[in-house]
Every structure is written in C-alpha cells, then in structure tokens.
Length: 246
Image (cartoon, rainbow, N blue to C red):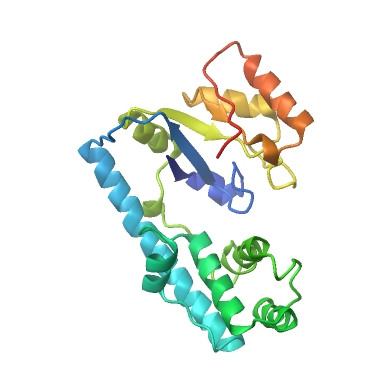
C-alpha cells in the first residue's frame, strides 16, 4: 500500500524527500499488510479524511485545467465524474487527469502536427516529447500544468496528508511493515536534499523508527544503487528490503 505523507516544515523550507517536484511530500509504503485487510476505527477515519481532502483538491485542479483550456483549447473540457468512471477504480489523482487530457487531445487532434500545435498553445511553448508517445505526453502534461508553480496546481491541504509518523502508524495498524521508497536518481536528475547523502538518509529513517527501505533498480544508476545499498547494509541491521518490482 502506498500513501503520501506531508512534512509541513520541509514544504516551507523547500526540502525534498522522494518527490522531486514537490518539497515536503513523501511517498510512503506498507508491505505485508494483513489479509483480509483489517482497519482500526482510527485508521478508517484517517483514510476517509485523506480521501475527501484529495478529492476536493483534484476537483479544484480540474476546474483550473478547464479554465486554462477555455483560453487555449476551447473545444476540450474535462469532467471529474467521467474521469473517475473511465480511468479509475473510484479514486481520481493527478495522473488520471493527465491521462484524460491526453486522450481528449488525441481525439480532437489526430494529426501529429496539429497535436504539436495544440500543445504549444496549451503550454505557451513547444512540447519537448514525441507527441505520439502517450506515456511521455501524460508525464509532460503533469509537469507543465499540474505541478507546483504551474497553471492548474493546487496547494496540498494538510488535511489531505498525514505526517510521516502518522503514515508509519497507519501501516503498522494494518499489520504491515512501514517502508520508505528511495528515489535516488530515479528521475535521472539531481538527488533531492534528504536523499543526496545516503548515510544521512539512513540515519534519518532509523531515527524515525523506519527500518525498511526499497529501491526500484531499473530507475537507478547501478553504481549509485550499490552505494546506497552498501550504506544501508553497513548499519548492521537486516531490517531492510530491496525491490525490483513495482
């Protein structure tokens, strides 16, 4: 299970964990949860609170996308209910908005050159990806429209996220192992502030009582991956994990 925690202090200071675009946001996982799943009432209340707040945020983002579309590509509009029913199992997130927008653009502009012109109108600059590559286009739409500082970005509400400590407690409540996913150079870019020193990251996780970390090796340079794993192993604890599948 994955959730997103939020460190308000890190958000204010511009410090990034494992989200390279959003300071303070922390992707956090739980491994080996009970099955059948069991929640305490407190965990249920927390998850419902998160769900309601995230739904409100994504609705606001869709509204902002639509206002921008009215100015740039007025033939296209997005609808929350249609996105939910078409692209999700009931929970709409940023990636679903980007997927719906990519599909709408493809339907409206079937010719690659027309699609490129539409994207230039949408971005105010030329697209930097192969416009026929849907996955690359979805990622670019997210980066250019939905991320911090962009036209449809909506600030995270504290009610939409738990703290890292609460995320850890949530996973334990469900019988799981709290686990931190290490990004490292996963975006082929610079390392984030929290992760740029593997020893600092290791000690920070242990200080917070988190004894499991995972990697997605296909995203990382092999030598960098070896450095992180060596540092994590060197602490003398067997309570960690390396994952190649996600």
